[in-house]
Image (cartoon, rainbow, N blue to C red; front, top):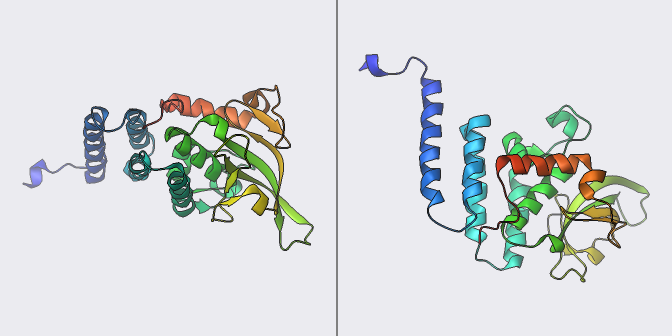
Length: 239
């Protein structure tokens, strides 16, 4: 029996895990919700680039979205917000990436198991787009977040995700610092500087600019390009 055991057990186990993942992915491509196949493909990318642990985290993310596909939007935003606030450890980019400012895709953040405010917000945005919430009702808000009480003059740059039940209404705020979801008017500790999504840019959170957000925000462009490279189509929801 010893003669048939691989000489490198760890390598054999990694290979076997990848084969099982690919087989499971092939089965998923033919079943379940439409639009799920690119998330299965993302699991394969995770396994090939980062290994089985990251692929397992991506699988849990996919299963969350699959479970939420037929739920109402309030349930969707609540559980997506909770998932990433729980799964990602807050960590400065300098520690995680050795860079002063790096915007990660959800795959990159799940691989590290850590991220900063941009990474939380981007992961939630991508998740809700895959659940079918249109771009016009989601925006990433770059803000100044007040530190301390109402009279404090201390603040820091921060990013949150805004969800609009209607584009004309005030948004609900998905945040990693204040984990409960509140409306923008309840978050008087946040001062919007600008907001954006994959289609537009809003200086000061007001009227839409004619500027292309990907032209103004190179880090955002890199995220969208990476998602495209993964084959993750935000315009193709799973429900």
